[in-house]
Length: 270
Image (cartoon, rainbow, N blue to C red):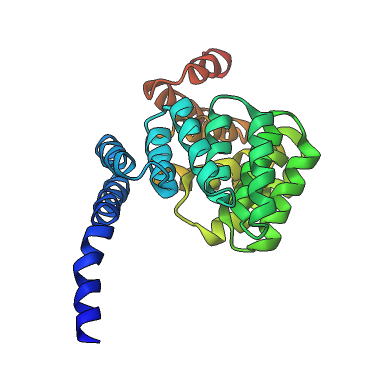
């Protein structure tokens, strides 16, 4: 038994050396991705794939890094390879969908999200992403359904509440529904300035001007350079008769570079 054990110990390093080296490069690339060194990560994934050309996870990692560098065609090509070697990789389909969405191939993105959902039906992110693609295609009913499914899977999914609120606010004119969804998202993620800003806009549409002022004030506290929050608060203040305060906010937004603010100033503050 001792002789057999020694023989195995002698053979294993030779058989696994290349695998262990590719694994090391993969781990190095993953760590660089986590540290947002995407160019360095790509170099490491290249090395891993040079040793092990069928390394699905390395294609997946390199695709992610390329996507973060806005090389969406390159990312798609890598996700294609990842899927060839691991056809049940829901993440590869989902991320390829995101890359296609970034290239405005919304139908292609939806097809990929459909495949990701078929493999992993309980991941709310795939539904939210499909909802965003459906929104881009003006499939608003389908989009709302997608966001609602994501929320049903994870009732603490702030992103899904935010997306559904934006849909209701910007496309469905359901401002009460938007306020309710933004409120729920704020309960989950109270540090997101966009949520207060968006709820403030919906409240403005409902002519709840004090509520709009309060929300945009909170948004500004979290994001002092958010020009749109100054515009929204300024318009709400003007609507309540506080023209001086409102125009100060509009001028602040203009100083932050907002063209919309300049237009509002010419309309209300001359």
